[in-house]
Length: 153
Image 1 (cartoon, rainbow, N blue to C red):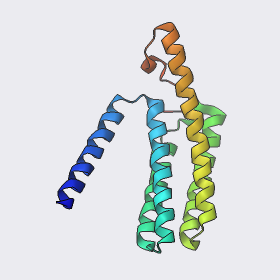
Image 2 (image 1 turned 90 degrees about the horizontal axis):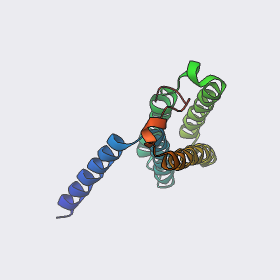
Image 3 (image 1 turned 30 degrees about the vertical axis):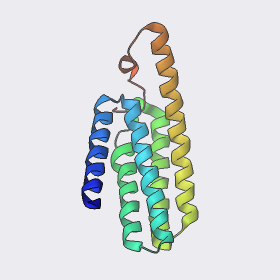
């Protein structure tokens, strides 16, 4: 019975995520990537404390993948200029910190990257709120303002 409930919950979560992605603005997708990386690092931290090193490694690989293949690849260094270049350098730093944390079981590095990701996520959430308020005032849809100079999104 528990397996059926777990499978149902997993299916619901997957459908909920797919629906969220399909209806999200580009800025919301960036926030979702930050959320995913933060959650993966939190899971890695828990696995480290439980001494499940294989699971820790899988979760850190997931976080690194989100940063490198999601956040960093979405940058357009030409359109984003100095901001995009600085973000690319910060993403490289985060990736290195996560690799070192994995090698040395360093919780402080995990916490540092989590703080950085939360700060960036908060900035994007503020941007979304501002854009939404402006769209409400002008009667424009939030999607029409979705071309932030972040990059390809």
